[in-house]
Image 1 (cartoon, rainbow, N blue to C red):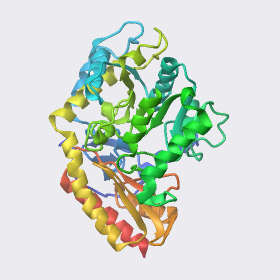
Image 2 (cartoon, helix red, strand yellow):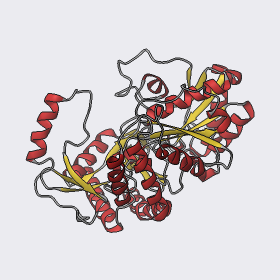
Image 3 (cartoon, helix red, strand yellow):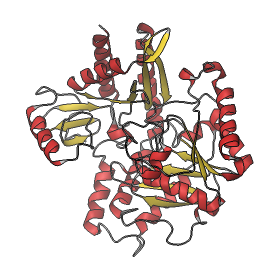
Image 4 (cartoon, rainbow, N blue to C red):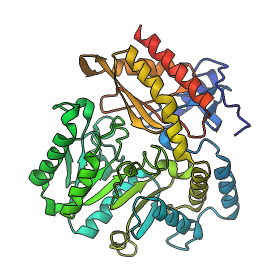
Length: 446
């Protein structure tokens, strides 16, 4: 990590000439369906800094969408991957297995919420994990239906597009989608019709009513929920709502599936966001931050549920690739050794006062929300007008990018800034990034 100084350097405009040239190649060679948020081409990275092909050093507030939680080129991950590549890169676990896969499952079984007996299965991506969690839930319960929520994002495969709420760009023109998927209102305090104070009770009642009237409890295999919604806008449900949903599902024999793909692995200040309210899901899906940048995902859950699937019912050629498994074991060791849960809470203590102070000066910030190093601000038209302000969001984002800060937006209405810095980034680097964001916001307001 020390090979890349941990500060911003701008040698050219952003993007620079070499990035522009490479982007021309991308346009000619890559499907237009693969979008790019910032056409800056990265040559190397370390800690919280991305170095582009023009020699610019950009501060990273996105972590590849919550993937490089342990930092870019984390030393333990680099060493573990290097050693594993020298040993072997693939055999297919379903043909000739290997210890690394088993070791990752053991760690997941121990780390995920609950002290019950668990099993895990490994896959390639978050969408694949979610799809397999639905398969497991249906097989174990013998029920067909799955209930999800407004503003949810669960992936881009056919089934997970059906589970995902936002149509554009994720679903537009790709249907028809898988059936037996039902959607309940999300407990979204800022935008709940009855007001934030009534949100917890009314949203819970609306959820129960949706299941009873549109599906039937005895037909519902699972309720799938992001404890803090990701792409939908970093929506944090009001206190107590998630635990009430979990208790009700348990009473009805409905499985609770926690999509912890973006919230997991220390990001919110706990190993998993469910732990904040002591919620123990039946199944947990993970990916993103688990493997330090390599593609790996998992479903972890109650042993009786995971073992309800017959041999051969789960798997995939690359699922649990040994190099990705080695990276995950090293990333988890880094999280434990460096107390990255504690570090995420420190990041929140650094970010939140700055963001709240900015909100106090500008009524176009409707809310600051999130936990740990998963924070967001939602931009609105004004103090008395909660209309989503996607125009201002885009303007601030563009200014951040030009200043050498990699920022991400999200939300069903495109009006939410999300902050997902690597937990390896220093306070000095994070403060510099916040200075840039604050300046970009102030300038865009004029």
